[in-house]
Image 1 (cartoon, rainbow, N blue to C red):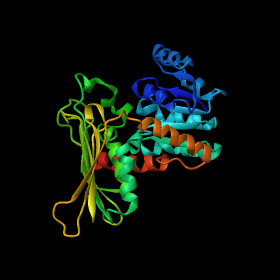
Image 2 (image 1 turned 30 degrees about the horizontal axis):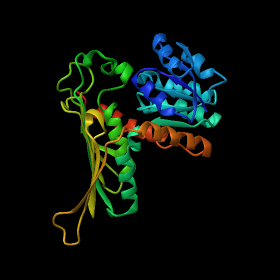
Image 3 (image 1 turned 120 degrees about the vertical axis):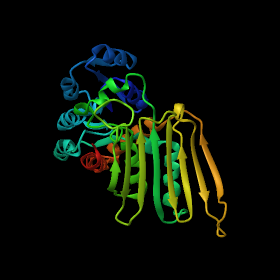
Length: 325
């Protein structure tokens, strides 16, 4: 596979590194041409500041889109219309309807589209899914998730605080990962209620998002995404009738990635506890890329894809329409 990277910032670099030996990078594109040139030089690729030219190239099979949210769907739709397979960095768009054009182009050309939600591919998350699927927890009851960081000086002046570019604040940022993970474990979710306040950062988007979601069978997900989490935090708890799983940490500033399995005993009382730790470097980006390559090879629908991204974005849009000042 020959790959074009559109957007050569931090995430574009991570995506480029994740490709490894499974594909070759042909072109790197960024409005900041010097940034494109720096990434292209590291991967022996061409550099350009024109994304339209990059997605139209005949020597590109896959486009990876890692730009601000306002351009994600437009670039992806153009790439798919040329028959390029596309990995769109989360959230995929500012609003669910923006992905309609990508879906239409995909149906016409047969190109596949994956949404970059790499948290599904963390080692603890993959093992937790295997445990859930094994049935050892019995029926799942609820998911409780927290995810956040504390920003940085001048954060309120960055593009994430410009709703015309970002589409929203923390709900569409880290909240997107929480909604996706909760849906992955529980199934389709609907918003029951929520709040999207701005407590600390001076800007027009929320710095905290609280969501109460529910499946058709009344399983609940309570999620909190925060830009006022002064010590970086990631925590997902999955509760079943016969035990609970707790995922914490993502490595780096979020702490060692860990999965704790609390298995309820027949006599109840203190559970049997098993702890798995993953102190090794994060390989979720590589795992996600490898799965996308298998999607293409096997001609299977990528998951998470457009459907999953639109479902999560519709929850976020409903949150914004009902709970923002």
